[in-house]
Amino acid sequence: MDKVDLELISALRRDARASLSELAQKLGLSRTTVRARMERLAASGEILGFTVVLKEDVADHPVRGLMMLGIEGRGADRIVRQLNGMPAVQAIHTTNGKWDLVLELGTPSLEALDAVLSQIRRFDGVVTSETNLLLATRKSAKIR
Image (cartoon, rainbow, N blue to C red; front, side):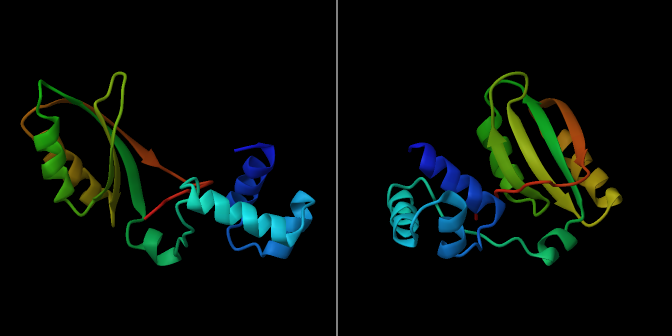
Protein backbone atom coordinates (compact mmCIF):
# COMPACT_ATOMS: atom_id res chain seq x y z
CA MET A 1 0.00 0.00 0.00
CA ASP A 2 1.21 3.43 -0.85
CA LYS A 3 0.28 6.86 0.52
CA VAL A 4 -2.70 7.21 -1.81
CA ASP A 5 -4.11 3.83 -0.70
CA LEU A 6 -3.76 4.91 2.93
CA GLU A 7 -5.54 8.20 2.19
CA LEU A 8 -8.32 6.31 0.38
CA ILE A 9 -8.77 3.94 3.32
CA SER A 10 -8.81 6.89 5.71
CA ALA A 11 -11.53 8.59 3.63
CA LEU A 12 -13.56 5.36 3.57
CA ARG A 13 -13.24 5.01 7.34
CA ARG A 14 -14.69 8.51 7.74
CA ASP A 15 -17.54 7.79 5.30
CA ALA A 16 -17.82 4.33 3.76
CA ARG A 17 -20.88 5.53 1.83
CA ALA A 18 -18.96 8.23 -0.05
CA SER A 19 -19.44 7.98 -3.79
CA LEU A 20 -16.55 7.40 -6.18
CA SER A 21 -16.95 11.01 -7.32
CA GLU A 22 -16.71 12.33 -3.75
CA LEU A 23 -13.66 10.18 -3.01
CA ALA A 24 -11.99 11.19 -6.27
CA GLN A 25 -12.54 14.87 -5.51
CA LYS A 26 -11.22 14.56 -1.93
CA LEU A 27 -8.12 12.67 -3.08
CA GLY A 28 -7.49 14.60 -6.28
CA LEU A 29 -7.83 11.47 -8.42
CA SER A 30 -10.09 10.31 -11.24
CA ARG A 31 -13.13 8.13 -10.49
CA THR A 32 -11.54 5.35 -12.53
CA THR A 33 -8.38 5.47 -10.42
CA VAL A 34 -10.36 5.39 -7.18
CA ARG A 35 -12.45 2.43 -8.39
CA ALA A 36 -9.36 0.55 -9.56
CA ARG A 37 -7.59 1.12 -6.24
CA MET A 38 -10.63 0.02 -4.25
CA GLU A 39 -10.96 -3.13 -6.37
CA ARG A 40 -7.24 -3.88 -5.95
CA LEU A 41 -7.41 -3.37 -2.17
CA ALA A 42 -10.43 -5.68 -1.97
CA ALA A 43 -8.82 -8.32 -4.20
CA SER A 44 -5.63 -8.30 -2.12
CA GLY A 45 -7.60 -8.67 1.10
CA GLU A 46 -6.61 -5.28 2.51
CA ILE A 47 -10.28 -4.24 2.44
CA LEU A 48 -12.40 -7.09 3.76
CA GLY A 49 -15.74 -5.39 3.32
CA PHE A 50 -17.98 -2.52 4.13
CA THR A 51 -20.39 -2.47 7.02
CA VAL A 52 -23.32 -0.62 8.43
CA VAL A 53 -23.73 -0.07 12.16
CA LEU A 54 -27.40 0.30 13.01
CA LYS A 55 -28.89 2.19 15.91
CA GLU A 56 -30.65 -1.01 16.99
CA ASP A 57 -27.30 -2.83 17.21
CA VAL A 58 -26.31 -0.50 20.02
CA ALA A 59 -29.86 -0.23 21.44
CA ASP A 60 -30.00 -3.99 22.11
CA HIS A 61 -26.81 -3.78 24.19
CA PRO A 62 -26.58 -0.23 25.53
CA VAL A 63 -24.27 -1.24 28.39
CA ARG A 64 -20.93 -2.18 26.90
CA GLY A 65 -17.61 -3.01 28.44
CA LEU A 66 -14.19 -4.51 28.02
CA MET A 67 -13.17 -7.30 30.36
CA MET A 68 -9.55 -8.38 30.59
CA LEU A 69 -8.84 -11.86 31.91
CA GLY A 70 -5.77 -13.45 33.44
CA ILE A 71 -5.89 -17.22 33.03
CA GLU A 72 -4.05 -19.84 35.06
CA GLY A 73 -2.18 -22.58 33.24
CA ARG A 74 -3.45 -23.84 29.90
CA GLY A 75 -7.16 -23.27 30.38
CA ALA A 76 -7.56 -20.61 27.69
CA ASP A 77 -9.07 -22.90 25.03
CA ARG A 78 -11.65 -24.26 27.46
CA ILE A 79 -12.52 -20.77 28.69
CA VAL A 80 -12.86 -19.48 25.13
CA ARG A 81 -15.32 -22.33 24.39
CA GLN A 82 -17.37 -21.34 27.45
CA LEU A 83 -17.31 -17.67 26.46
CA ASN A 84 -18.41 -18.47 22.91
CA GLY A 85 -21.70 -19.77 24.31
CA MET A 86 -22.53 -16.52 26.10
CA PRO A 87 -24.70 -14.02 24.16
CA ALA A 88 -23.27 -11.04 26.09
CA VAL A 89 -19.76 -11.83 24.82
CA GLN A 90 -19.56 -10.02 21.49
CA ALA A 91 -15.88 -10.59 20.75
CA ILE A 92 -12.94 -12.46 22.27
CA HIS A 93 -9.39 -11.28 21.62
CA THR A 94 -6.16 -13.01 22.60
CA THR A 95 -3.41 -10.62 23.54
CA ASN A 96 0.07 -10.36 24.97
CA GLY A 97 1.18 -8.62 28.12
CA LYS A 98 -0.59 -8.72 31.47
CA TRP A 99 -3.90 -10.09 30.14
CA ASP A 100 -4.52 -13.34 28.30
CA LEU A 101 -7.94 -12.47 26.86
CA VAL A 102 -9.82 -9.25 26.22
CA LEU A 103 -13.60 -9.56 25.92
CA GLU A 104 -16.06 -7.14 24.38
CA LEU A 105 -19.31 -7.38 26.33
CA GLY A 106 -22.77 -5.98 25.67
CA THR A 107 -25.85 -6.23 27.87
CA PRO A 108 -29.22 -4.50 28.19
CA SER A 109 -28.54 -3.23 31.74
CA LEU A 110 -25.88 -2.76 34.40
CA GLU A 111 -27.47 -5.56 36.41
CA ALA A 112 -27.14 -7.92 33.45
CA LEU A 113 -23.50 -6.88 32.99
CA ASP A 114 -22.83 -7.53 36.67
CA ALA A 115 -24.31 -11.03 36.34
CA VAL A 116 -22.17 -11.78 33.28
CA LEU A 117 -19.01 -10.53 35.01
CA SER A 118 -19.75 -12.70 38.05
CA GLN A 119 -20.36 -15.75 35.88
CA ILE A 120 -17.09 -15.30 33.97
CA ARG A 121 -15.08 -14.69 37.14
CA ARG A 122 -16.28 -18.06 38.45
CA PHE A 123 -14.89 -19.97 35.45
CA ASP A 124 -12.28 -22.48 36.54
CA GLY A 125 -8.88 -21.06 35.52
CA VAL A 126 -9.79 -17.35 35.63
CA VAL A 127 -7.44 -15.95 38.24
CA THR A 128 -7.80 -12.21 37.75
CA SER A 129 -9.87 -9.76 35.77
CA GLU A 130 -10.41 -6.08 35.16
CA THR A 131 -13.44 -4.48 33.55
CA ASN A 132 -13.94 -1.06 31.98
CA LEU A 133 -17.29 0.35 30.90
CA LEU A 134 -17.39 1.86 27.43
CA LEU A 135 -19.01 5.28 27.69
CA ALA A 136 -19.01 6.46 24.06
CA THR A 137 -17.70 5.16 20.74
CA ARG A 138 -15.99 7.79 18.60
CA LYS A 139 -14.98 5.38 15.82
CA SER A 140 -15.87 1.80 15.09
CA ALA A 141 -14.36 -0.47 12.48
CA LYS A 142 -16.40 -3.53 13.28
CA ILE A 143 -16.18 -6.29 10.69
CA ARG A 144 -18.79 -9.02 10.67
